Length: 260
Image 1 (spheres, rainbow, N blue to C red):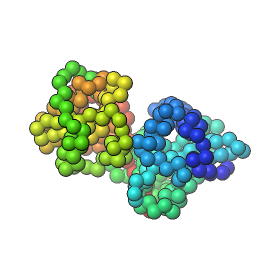
Image 2: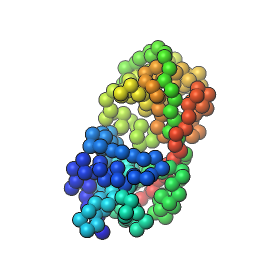
Image 3: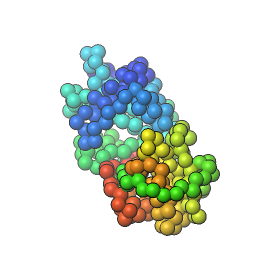
Image 4: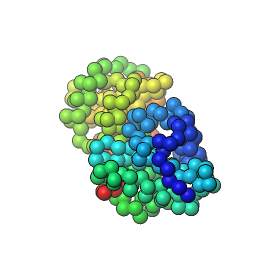
């Protein structure tokens, strides 16, 4: 087996490899070229630092490393079905961690589904520590007004009032890359929502009181159906509000970090 730079492959090839790597996964993932290119741009994949595992000339797995300053993030690790349980995933992880260290990354972050015990065991073996629990929420859309605000103003309010670090997929750098972003404001609160294809997703939200948080969620519901919120910290005050409004948790993940 050889580890080669992901930059040697086209976005279409990497998309196909990603899809094959998640075949039979707890939450199946199908990625086409457009989706892969979106993720690479929005999440700052470093294709030179990411790795593809090749056996007898055939790509069998990949590990995507994203970078922002001294922080790195594992944007996906997948191994094709026939090559699993042979150490390919560990080799890929060690390869991108070594590359991150050379590039001056100080912390490598990742999320892993709570039921994925083999992956959790591997990450713990590599030195990753648990940070917090994250939840993926969905909520049916609902008619309602939407007091819009300039996205930049809403984002500035959130940055001044947020109480927790945003996960990688919803971080400020991600928001800056995205199109279709809308701002919402109420007294004592603001939200950034992305709307695509009739669906809405909360990117960031902060409120000084539960009433403001609930008002923002209700406004966001009016922008698309369904409304989703990716990787909301389980202890966030918005979680019980989402539950009361009829939302559901579609997945739970451990956020983990490796200090280099």
